[in-house]
Length: 239
Image (tube, rainbow, N blue to C red; front, side, top):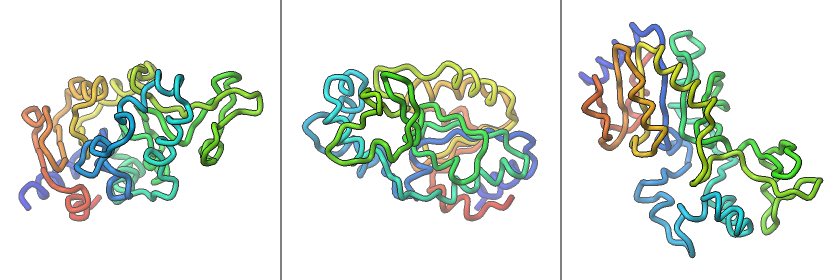
């Protein structure tokens, strides 16, 4: 209860909160965490998940890529969790400049957040590799078929695969958002994925808060660490 009260007090006095989120904010929406005991890294396939969702594998084996991608990376029926709604409400109240997320599920936007930086892209956006035409999620959902554009080109999800670089514009925007915040709240991420996790070092504000079920490499830098489920914590916070 002491930690909850401390978090409530910090939020009450915050002028500009920036949120930084990972897979843990979407587990309550039914989307598994990659690194949890039930996550993708602990499932068995003909190839390791890290290999399948790499750029070279996508180019060399698009059929196998899409078989895995449709089955394990897309959750079209998922609804925003209490965390997504909490973050959107903070922005609507004018106490948050937005959210930086490592997630590709699009649920922050679905919850109503307007200023969302999706470092790893989004499953909701897809682009033809030949003509550049944009396609919706439905364009790639047909089972057992490669998603092809009307021009005949292969459609690629606008997600950052292994071996690909993050978008420079998104990184610069994220650095600016973090550098100008007085409170940074990190939620549902182990902070082990770089370069995204390295963005934390740009925070120079008053309070760094980490809410995650397990410890992170940045816990010693935080003013407040809460090792609990986001649902349990945020259900007790009022804004």
